[in-house]
Amino acid sequence: MAGINDIERLFKAHYEQLLRMALGLLHDNDLARDIVHDVFASLLDADPLPANLSAAYLLRAVRNRCINHIRDCETHQRIASLYYLDNDMYESEEYVNELVFAEVQGIIQADLSEKARRVIELRFTEGLPFAEVARQMGISETAVFRHLRHALVLIRQKLNQNG
Image (cartoon, rainbow, N blue to C red; front, side, top):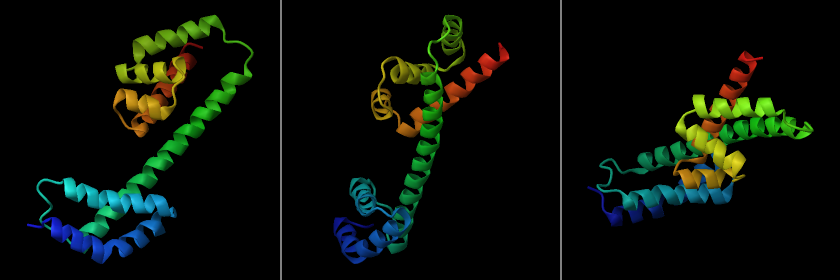
């Protein structure tokens, strides 16, 4: 079983190598340091410590966290760009047809999950940024984006079905 001294020894022995790998994947020095530190912090919080604690384990853990971060950022950027495109379309209209607005409200109430409704409410009604919506709901920003994207796709589909 690995102990705190083993973690410290691994940190001293492999920190630079782990940082170089993270930096190569992320191209952001601060973020790379954060991810390497997070891996070691998670080991300190782990109960029990992983039995196979080695340099290979650390490399795999840092690599996986970097890949997860890249994936989450790509998802965030895709959804944000869709959101901004949608927002530009609505801002260019001079008014919102009251019947369409009522229909959208009906779709939100009848067809969306509770979480998707809450995301729509916090984001559009209260005007909260994505990070604050995530914090209030106790979910990740990626989950907020997924709920929002799902809701917008469903609303568009229902509006198109109804002409």
